[in-house]
Each structure stands twice: as C-alpha cells, then as structure tokens.
Amino acid sequence: MSEFIEVNVEECEGIDAAVCLRFKKADVTTRTIVKLWYENESGQEGEWSVSAADATSKSVGPATAYRVEDSSDGVVWLVVGGSGGLLLTHASGDTERVAYLVLARI
Image 1 (cartoon, one colour):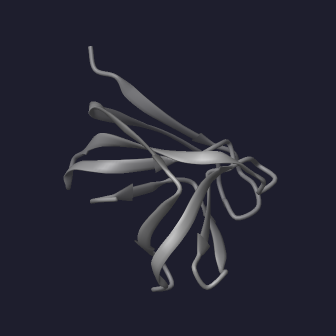
Image 2 (cartoon, rainbow, N blue to C red):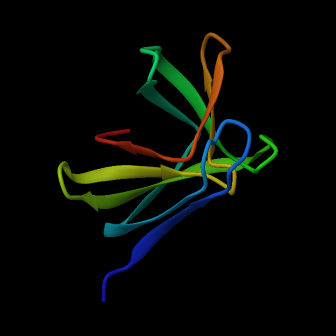
C-alpha cells in the first residue's frame, strides 16, 4: 500500500482558501528545510528562509520536504508547513505566505 502526504491548510491571512490535498510519496526521503532557492509569482528570485506557520502567521518550526510523485514532472519535492502553510522570508526582508511548494529540486 502506498503512503500519502496530506496537506491541510486553513484559510487565513495570506492564504485565500483552505487547501486539502494528497500527494503520493515517491520514497521515504524527507528533509527539514530552513532555506531554499525560490522564485515567487512576482519574479522575486533568491534565497528564502522558510518555516511552518500557524493560522496567525506565527512561525511554529521548520518546514518539511518529502519526495512525491507528480503526474507531469515525475518525482519532485513537496515542502509543507503548519496549519497556516509556509512563511517565506526573502533575503531582502520581503515576506509571503503560501500553502505549500512543489519544487523540482531543493
């Protein structure tokens, strides 16, 4: 039987709608993530600090990355946080919230 990772994120500041998704694990590989290279929707690229967030935007610890199967990209990294998703802070000091990230590499 395959194992799945569930992403459950509440609607909150920075997260427009609740998210409930399941991703199939590709293997048992997991990583604790505190920084990653990322380009946001606005085109701001660079190193971002990343942490799990609760619904009040408070950081509640590190994010976790799992290797999961993606129907279009093969095996990718799923980065998840807390009930409020992920809190990202760019090296410039800009911050943003996302429910989760799917990345080709970390």
